[in-house]
Image 1 (cartoon, one colour):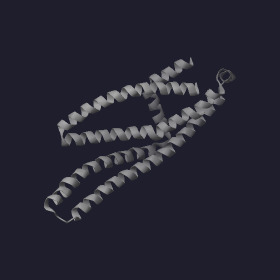
Image 2 (cartoon, one colour):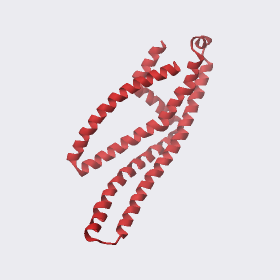
Image 3 (cartoon, helix red, strand yellow):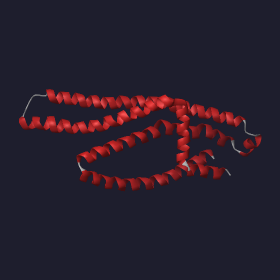
Image 4 (cartoon, one colour):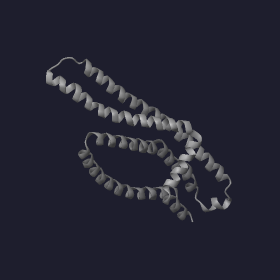
Length: 213
């Protein structure tokens, strides 16, 4: 019965993720909205900074080298602007990471509290049929894995998604042939990564079962 329960959970990762996000939004709605906005700002700043580097080279550095000009005022303003863009992205990333720490720790505590309340209502036969280490693993190892996913995996996934979309739009606007070449290369990389990820996920699941089950 226990193994069947684990398999049902494993077959519905999106349902589990949706339930977790709903649980988080019920407690930290405003903070999560701020985190999403800051992730958008950080992703935009990173992409915008990379594109602005092209402007600095094409409109300032290359003409200065061609004319041997010593007027650095325009270049200085451009460099300051680019630094401001990157600084905005760094500050946004710093703030949303700090917010995610408080959100993940608070969510972990709430989950542990609810688990303990549920544990108090279980009959004695549950404790007779489950090892103490298995029960404690739910409170330590499993909840800590959730905390890491909330504080790191989810923000990184959203950041990567926004960055990917922004970069893809920028690439199309610059060169369609190069975009097609990159898409083919990324597709090959995605296939390799997916193959490795499927194998590593099985090993991770086995590790979790060995630790907690």
